[in-house]
Length: 250
Image (cartoon, rainbow, N blue to C red; front, side, top):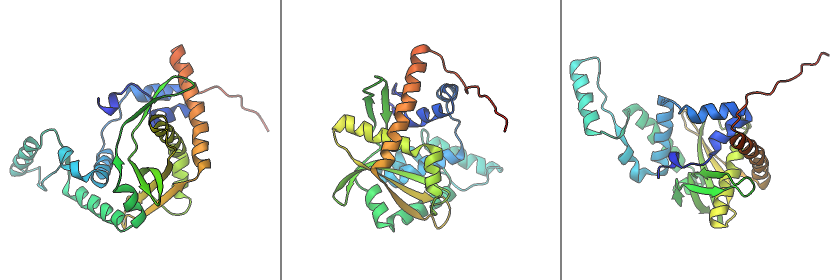
């Protein structure tokens, strides 16, 4: 079964409930539109994590002037030959190659991302709400004698404090908790969690972030709150928006 069609809640959807249940319902009923940024991000993930099957899903587009007749014909022939694959420009592929080389030069990041199992779908049932959940860790591997769940992120900056702010904004604590819980429910193994973050611009600097137990515990607190809201809304069929507030004077 395709991962996206598994009838279970995932982290990116559950995170929307922090705004309101209405935001969650809109997200799941309106699939995200394809953008070049999304295509590039998925291609980079695929190349860096699963190079051996990259060519099954992506094809490098010829550099042609599609305003000309010859260019249009050459590009049309390329699309026909690579039917079912996502086109990637040569320029984007050059960037992805440079990003991959930067990871290979970072011994810890390379060890975490280039070994183990990649993109394994995991399903489990939450023990309190009985709600089905799912996740798909980028990597499950071993490093320095410990078992790890590893997630690869592209980011604007790995400067001190920058990725930490991204963790708060994008719900990375929730992700660490859900993935850790999902793996435990399937394997009865408590794994450590790490992020490999890479800047999206030259020199494509890489930084590894090891999550301490408190980071994951905070994420589990967020998970319990959000999965509880999700469960109540699903049972009631009511997906309210923002709560009204009282504004007080000074």
